[in-house]
Length: 348
Ligand SMILES: NC(=O)c1ccc[n+]([C@@H]2O[C@H](COP(=O)([O-])OP(=O)(O)OC[C@H]3O[C@@H](n4cnc5c(N)ncnc54)[C@H](OP(=O)(O)O)[C@@H]3O)[C@@H](O)[C@H]2O)c1
Image (cartoon, rainbow, N blue to C red; front, side):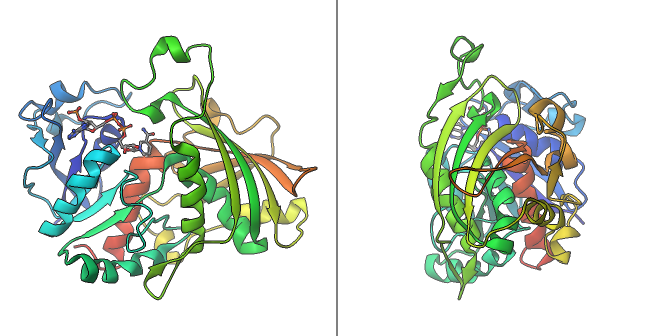
């Protein structure tokens, strides 16, 4: 018996990725699709205007879209709602007893809410005990980070474990699909680069510290690193590229840094999850890599691809990292979180 799940914001950019990746999932079965009043009561094919290159799964094309405030026939929901809607709607589901896996920023920084990347901080699920006690919820809320944060954290975590990351600069080059649909007007972005994506830099700076900090005594901690982020929207369809310079706690040679990335694995129980990539971080030696067009689908979209390691004259090292924003940075990340909850016996 598969676990019945719903998707909130199912018609949007991330919602469609959830549909694609859950349609044939070995553990979960989509039993509800929900969105705004604009979509409610319409068949999913009509409301979603399917935009992915894979075909819309036939079974779901005729499913009637519910409104996100409706009671849905599912034990878990994957939320791809904007932050303002998520702030209201996600607690309703957790209160009613559902497990909520959220992509929205509304609750990410709360101390009793896991900000989970299973390969990095699987023990952050321990804070759920406190969450249920404090909020008197029958269900639970687990979040994944901002798309750029996840990709950056995956590149930093192996180096933090091996040498300590004390400070870093990051500049992001973010794909247009990261702004949702219809997103950035084409006349603004074609042949152009737009600096300073609203609220993005602060999210990256805060969230990386929470992810690398892990959890102790059922409370989320903050890593002491100092991080400065600049963000840019670029005319790329999928894949966020990030340019990183960092200072380490302990000096490391280039081969040690490369080995830290190549040897990085999640715990055995995480590596065995259906959506876990064989290697979460791929290091490419070839010059001029990674590139969105060539590398964004590495590991079925679940890998962070790192390349271009060079000494940094200001800090210690600089490099480029790339990841798929709607898969590893959103839907794929949430599904991996849900798989970990199942494997730990928290969701059945
Ligand atoms: N795009 C990415 O790469 C990415 C990556 C990581 C995280 N995220 C986060 O994921 C969330 C969704 O992003 P997206 O890019 O998928 O956005 P999107 O394409 O604009 O989709 C938004 C979804 O939310 C629904 N919605 C909008 N207003 C609503 C309301 N008032 N009540 C109920 N439902 C409402 C829409 O339904 P209708 O179709 O009915 O309007 C649609 O299903 C956001 O929090 C975003 O920050 C996005």
